[in-house]
Amino acid sequence: MLDRLGQVFRGNEPVAIAVELAVIWAAVFLMLRFLRGTRGAGVLKGVIVILAAVILALRLGGSGSETFARLRFVAEALAGTLAIALVVVFQPELRQALMRLGQSRWLGRGRVQLTEAVPAIDEAVEFLSRNQFGALIVVERSVPLADMVRTGVPIDSAVSARLLESIFWPNSPLHDLAVVVSGNRIAAANVQLPIADASAVPPRLGSRHQAAVGATVETDAVVVVVSEQTGAIRIASDGGLSEPIAYDDFAAALRSALTAESDGSGTEGAVHA
Image 1 (cartoon, one colour):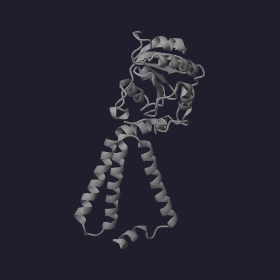
Image 2 (cartoon, one colour):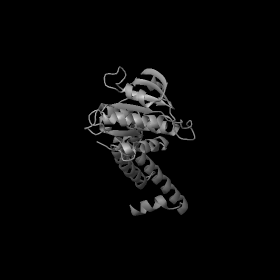
Image 3 (tube, helix red, strand yellow):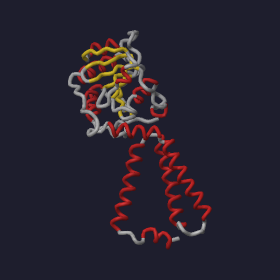
Image 4 (tube, helix red, strand yellow):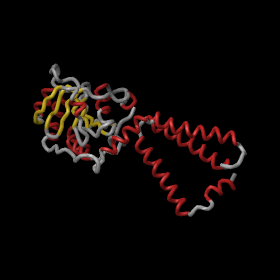
């Protein structure tokens, strides 16, 4: 077996071998980094172990020898099946990865200017948090949210703290669901957001927080969520949810989230179930 293993590397330049191993390591690292905190991470680790075992078995078994021919046939069939299964199992993650690629600074549009929106959201969130009024504020970045906006009531008004406060005032006709902010304007209210999988949010948090995370899975939007039960303020981005943020730190945290590059790794300090 050791002789067979030596033949795998014999005849290859050391530099070429080093480059190949570096590329493989980088690919695996990037995949695990992207899937960190998702259900796909554990599955991928298992698949990598199986594929590594299958490939090693094929190489050690020899391609032209009749030894273990039936085992090699099964291993080759298993490798092909795993390749197809990867596409099926990781379909949501692959779709998200392609979305992230389209959101890059080279392929996406420029960041939307939010000079007026941030102070207005900051002031409104303080009022909503102190009074324990639940709220969901979706802030558009480079990916247009037209599909979400179409599910709500058009507003198309300049962002102001008073308007946000009145929208989320209990019993207001528009207080349910979310508000979408595009640039320095409120695009729509009463907007339906996609709900993230229950495993993406701790059980102690409800559907409002699931919706906040869900809106950030396939877009680079930043979502501010205020808990109706506790008044706690959190920020969702890149499919992750932050720990509660003190009001004094909220404006800085919001600006940081809005200017951060989307990498699919989740909000810094994200909580998990």
